Length: 184
Image 1 (tube, rainbow, N blue to C red):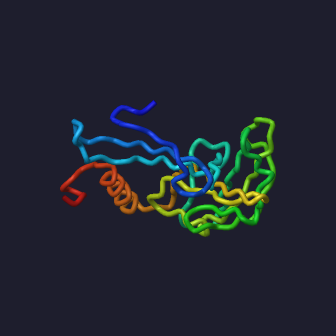
Image 2: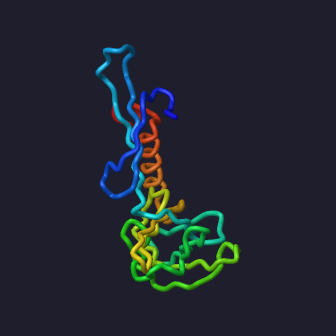
Image 3: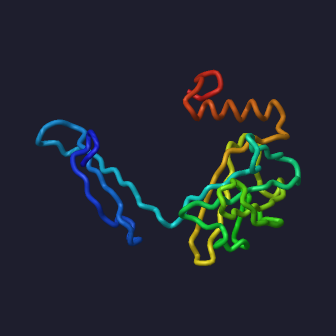
């Protein structure tokens, strides 16, 4: 089956990584003599496993103070497909600056009967700054399987002016107001 607008589809290992990727050819002009078009490629990236994390577990808002060394708790959650107890804890990093955990503990955070791991990171070392909307936890298992998970954050310790500039930039990125705050 080919999506609307697609002329044909193929499956091939485009990147040479041993996994199959999907290619879709799209015609941009009608008629038999058309030579214009594009090819869409959906890569089957299995090099990084997507995992579930919970920043500030058990709380509705994931608050992080950008200017504090207060510890940030980040839970690496167990799923049917991922067991946190297979994680090499020395590889785990958090935030834009890739902070190493101060410590960790095993705990069933989400009460699903499976052990999760809660890591604790110093706030400043994580590198979360005013304007950030999410932060990531990365690492690898003892078997070498890389993983990554992200969760939303509410950054505290930002001045009103800094927050306004960050929100204005976000508005511009999302196609917001033009002329007043955005170029052109």
